[in-house]
Amino acid sequence: LTTTLYSATHSRVSISPLPFAVQSYTTTMAASAARRFNPSNATILSSQSDVFTDFLRAKLEDDLESVPGIGPASKASLQAAGIETTHHLIGQFLLLRDPDCQTHMDAFHIWLSEVGVTGGQKNNVIMAISQKVDVWIPGTWDDSLMGE
Image (cartoon, rainbow, N blue to C red):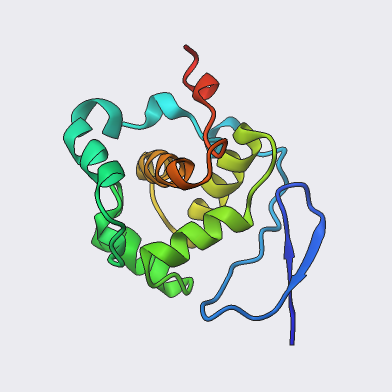
């Protein structure tokens, strides 16, 4: 049994079944600006900087609500999509990997929208997950997205 997924560049990828459901990424990357990742909309950098910094420094917890930007409603949406733990969420993030950082973040933003993560919280989740993963896999995040 294999599952066919589509990467951010719409190329087909067949993988063996994972222990959690993985949503197929089928949305075109010619998405509207509202469906693009915008780091300036990530409120976590200014209003909750301690929460963000603590998340980056701490050991990764299984509980999805340990990710800045994920509350009970987002957790329920993610679980309905088969994402039970923070590790599963990071797995989904990595499945959407694209060599272009903006394209990768946009793909994750669209996927989060499709599973029901709401509003500006998507940007906070993307900032938290992408920067946490960048500690383990340098080059996952690109500081030029911040416009500095």
